[in-house]
Length: 542
Image (spheres, rainbow, N blue to C red):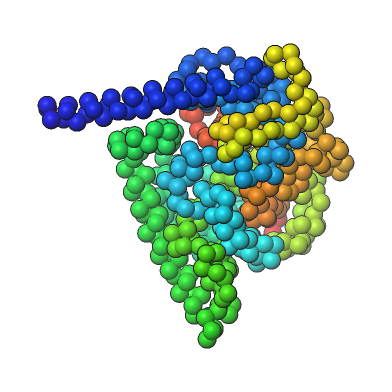
């Protein structure tokens, strides 16, 4: 026992000393922050967790603060580190346009690397530009046209699964889990040529799905996430086997091994079409995102410095899963919720969808449906799956504002001074539902608002649709076309097939926030988990 104590006591003192050092660094940063004395801040209930606990317990907390303090204020995260909250459009446009200054912070990148490796989600600067160049062909409009048939196939499979349940007298369906299975199958097949068979009730456990589930959907995922966050904040804790450490290690090992095999098989299939000069002649039947990426990465004349390494290619697989699986299923679930509440919108949408005479629409046919487009836009405006993002200033800067603000010191500020190291909270939901941008009914679901959008909406930083949902600038969502096409296919298939009715009162459905993603949930449920029960009635439309 003496030997163990001789080891543990120095470790405990070292960790404590590191915490104290880190706390002093945070205190110093807060004291010398040029924003101190300018911006208001909510009270700090606990100097260890700051306002973090309030935000974790109430997904509307920042909206409450925004109502009280305005578009710009300071709140405090873990260890009371101050974060600048801004929903000022001029400030957000400036941040989006300067990725060399405002980057995903070291803490986020460390977490991302440990979870999924050196993929696009953990890349910055030149590495990020290299990843984008390699991935751009895989997410272009021509590629999305090709893989739309996969979206349709899996949407029809989901439709048939739910129809079977309805005929067995199970009219109330928890739709989010089915949508997640569908998008999982899609991201497997269309993303990297892998069959999850999540919609197949006869399929056995899938090793890659188990690895993903261990990381992101285990019953203890919240605890494990906090432990990983603590290890990223205090690197010395990586030496301590905290809860979830071995889960992460084993899941990453399985993901990497399976990912390596997937990449190897994709390369083998591509090499079968190799020309005598070493170039890839065609993709043949390999039309998934990974195959297109590999073809671009193997292109003749591409400098070695621009090629992705094998580890970087493998890391795209969990990146595709993380970015493209949860978000689309969540957005579609929110759309179905709104349609269950607004039955006239649902009927009008169904009438338009039935004007297409096939169950297998092309992407161009889907994009020719104006009301479907408006329903998708309005869903992504009111219910963006990702609620916020963070950026960290890597250099001193001056942040422009749409209009001067009156500081706590009584002075007027047309800009905000930003010191290197400042963390900035960029609220997607607040921007998308801002009354200053969208009018007094900004929080309401009203698809026809897209017939005549306000002038202010044209200034929202956006890669698509005057919405902040897919971000803007160099770090906009590269897969937004993929997500939009998949969501349109799902709504096309499901709204034609089913009458969608609310199973619980509208007031009982609200956001369940895990990390940065807000999923629909029954708020009155004793179990804290996401899920959306709806009553589906088959319309026998073939």
